[in-house]
Amino acid sequence: MNHHLFQPLLYQVAMGILSEGEIAPALRGILRSQENVRVLLAEATAFDLAARHVTAGTPDGRELSVAYDSLVVAAGTTASYFGHDEWQAVAPGLKTLEDARNLRSHILGAFELAELAAAPEERAA
Image (cartoon, rainbow, N blue to C red; front, side, top):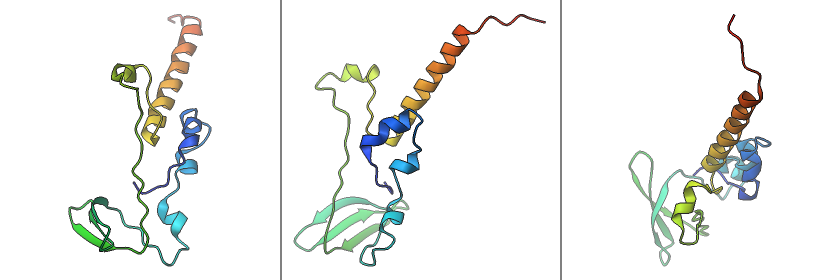
């Protein structure tokens, strides 16, 4: 993930009020002025806390070993259905940008169908 997601505003993206970029700015942009920070696109696979190293895999398959002074780990979230996974089909989560896009598409599609249902029938010419 190469952006910082402000989850409390996901519903605004789902409603089409805010754009994705307004609630999920790029990490590089946020940290651009920090001279002591390096941003890498990779997936952490192991931590050596004693040696202060993170092992990570890059999108092109390389393995990195990165030393650090301070480490921030953001593990992410998932929706919880409290042991009732069958609810997922009727109660979609809203934890990711993809969730917000899917919900927005569903809402706008429902408006389109409602407009069709309310419109008078077209007559053939």
